[in-house]
Amino acid sequence: MLEYESFAPQKDPFCIAVVADSHIPDHTRAFPAGFDTRLGAIKPDLLLHAGDIILPETLRALAAFAPVRAVKGNRDFLFGKELPLVRGIAVYGQKIVLTHGHLNTAVYWRDKVAFALRGYHFERYLRRFEHCFPEANVIVFGHTHRCENRWENGRLYLNPGLLSGRDQRFPTPHIGVLNVYENGTIEANLIPIEGEGQ
Image 1 (cartoon, rainbow, N blue to C red):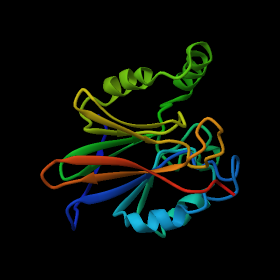
Image 2 (image 1 turned 30 degrees about the vertical axis):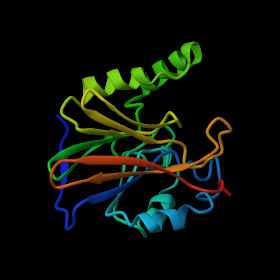
Image 3 (image 1 turned 180 degrees about the vertical axis):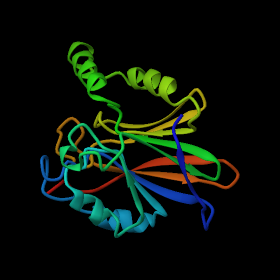
């Protein structure tokens, strides 16, 4: 079973900003225009990056806003074993799983074939996450470059989509915002960022 890092919030709600698939510098040279302003306005207590970070400098830049927890994506070769594939976080008793979504190389290639044959289907990820993390209240993931903010079977699935904004299918980058309340309530939003990567 996954170990969960426990946070002792100093305020209610505990605000978590979520990003994924920043792809700096392989898709873009910098965060999208307006990203710093938007993230600064959110004032997160914690920042989660769901992988495909590419360079360690990206995490250092994000740490200026809040403590950062990240996982390794399928393109994060430079991190070696520095980052886990999955990370557990507990806030006010709510269990949050952070994963890129590919889980391992074999699953990654199986997904590539399934996507080529049938396209994107959230249900593939739903089944995988339900099987792997049955105890989780929230699954935060990336990898698909598609925004998701949905409740399924009593669990929240949050994917902020492609942060670089360089994919014409998903031109508007987003920041996910997850508010966890002391009474166990969980709220999530996807905040669009004006502008595109540099």
